[in-house]
Amino acid sequence: MRLSHRTLVILAAGGSAALLLDAFGFQHLGGMAPCKLCLWQRWPHAAAVLIGAACLAFGQRALAWAGALAAAATAGVGIYHAGVEQGWWPGPTTCTSGPVGGLSTDELLNQIMAAPLVRCDDIPWQLMGISMAGWNAIASLLLLGLWIAAARRA
Image (tube, rainbow, N blue to C red; front, side, top):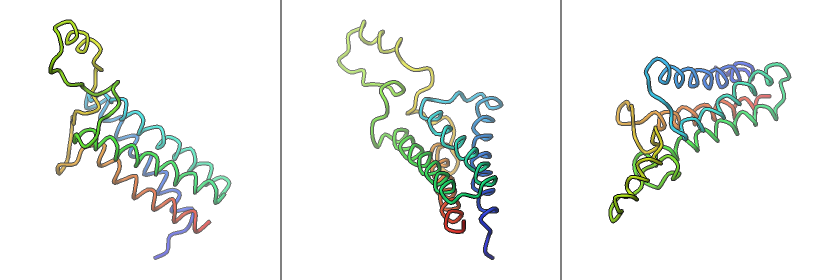
């Protein structure tokens, strides 16, 4: 079964909308405040929803490619965030903890006082060993595939 350009755009933009709703649900209903990288993952999804609406209205191939770019951006941030959570690479110093060895009492207190409320290197929730950031990356890569298919069918 071959899906139409319109159907692919609806699925891709709708997928981003669903992921945004999930994120807001975890935040507002589940009480899980987002970290800086979590927020960075939301912006491309919001852009993809708007791009999807424009793509449905105007049907431009370039808009579908812009949706693909938005999906790729959030997937990239999701992969980066998942790596920060796993300790594979360092995250932004504004949302991760630093080493405490060799710090004086005053330096340690300053580090504690400057620590972010929600750290990017903590995993507050996971399913099958994959964090929310990891699931966002996986879902966003699937959405990227839908956007590419939509661009090719425009």
